[in-house]
Amino acid sequence: MSSESAFFTLKRDEYVPAPHARGPWSPGMLHGRLLGGLAARAIEQRHARPGLRFARLTVDLFRNSPMLPVTVETSLVRDGRRIRVADATISTAQGVIARASAVLLREGEQPGGERSLVTPAWDVPPPEGPPVEANGPWTPPFDLWRVTPWGAPGPGRVWMRERFALVDDEPLTPIVRAALAADFASPLSNSQADGLRFINADYTLTLARPPEGDLIGMESTGHVSDGGVATGQVTVHDAAGPFGFCVVTALANGSAMTKPPSAG
Image (cartoon, rainbow, N blue to C red):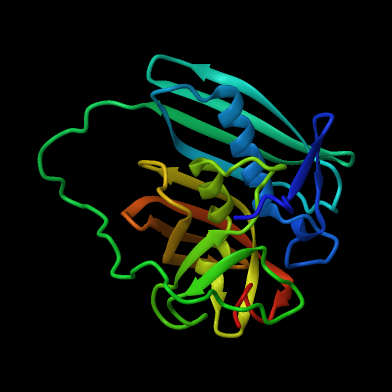
């Protein structure tokens, strides 16, 4: 991961986006995945405590935003012995563009016994070769390895790795890395053979533990849509196994991408 060209530079409480912070739908649009990363970063820095583990992060993407400086405000909603809830509001000069809510739970002793359902580790080893090369008008600012072809029947599978810092030269923390990757649940679960025809309105990332290392794997495990409204879900993995899930809701988009990001 390079810190020489972070997505944002922090100046007087505003996050100023770099050119590569734009998204795939429009050259002048800020990528929604970065808003979740900023929210996770702010909540972690201001409200995380030792022994409290991020268990859920919900990011609502209200509106598309041009490439404007961003501010992030947080508030502590609930502070109990075993649960802490914090919110984040993300704004530009044009108003509020997104919000997020995080639940942090107290770590404790793992219950013994045999559980009736356990998500298995997938049979996909971490990638060894180079990532997919960009083949379109938008160059993704992350590395991507396709395990399955886009739009093929059955679960879609990818490995991802961030290439840039989020803010200045700060190293990515596990929760920020997971929050950035989680937005990809939408194109992975909503893609079809002729491209991506849904744009997500939100995503909810749930975690049993923080991810390990810089690689995050995703496996789409569900898609349902009707009347232009879709919901999709993925299981998120690292090299040690599954660590959580992500669910997205999405709307049919008139300006479809003929190929998902980095489809090749």
